[in-house]
Length: 354
Figure (cartoon, one colour):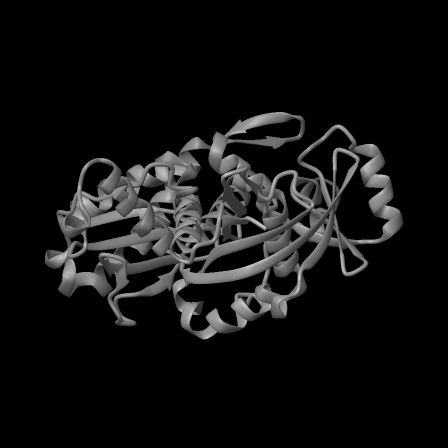
């Protein structure tokens, strides 16, 4: 049986997936529901591909945007950092199942990442959980009213430090543009991976991480910006907004209030700036002794979906450290594409067919 290479970025904002067959993302929102609730939701949303019901180990879960719409109290991206619960596993397997396309039974090579602070502590346990003792995962998805049964055997699982996806992506891009491995293998590149739950900072020489905890660490991220914006909205307008509404407001610069729209673009900019200063100050403090040794610094991660944050961070790096940092192309999917490339490399080097 041919093997399919898949990259999975199990982020706290979105769970992203990438394979030769299909790529995409789904909101990292999940809630357990009864069989009766599942049947009703399936019936009411048979035309909506973004409403996903999952049956795994005889239990049902609702995944994606619908959680925030009909179960707002459950719409919190509060999966434990230890990543050892069943919700984490179901999100991972759902993304993997979608990435397999139309195949009902398939063998896969999967690469994923863990936050820098979790990587060494959780890597082996996470691999064991996904590998499942070599037994196939059986999962059933309901999308647009249609049942899709999958039997997925994970032949190999590679768990990387989260920013390595971007590093592999960058190296691949440079080689496609004409550089050779000898040109890039000794470059020292620093990556600031700004996600929903953590900002992961790592330094690489070629594809190898520089092994120092003061250099590679995790710090504040998008969730602190969301909380700051929630507080600011309440102080200015007396309105309490949940996470999902604020996330949308950070993208659009607008929120709903009593049947009308309120422009919060300046408030958003202020929240971005306050938290960007905190993030930049901590990064520069930890990297102070190495700043002159870097060849490049890159910004990546799902939080950069809002280009305003990327611009603010670039400006702060230039003002505070005289560093002109780059934003990777498509920062929201830079890691997951890099993970996909790692899976493809495993297929090629080990003689699997793809």
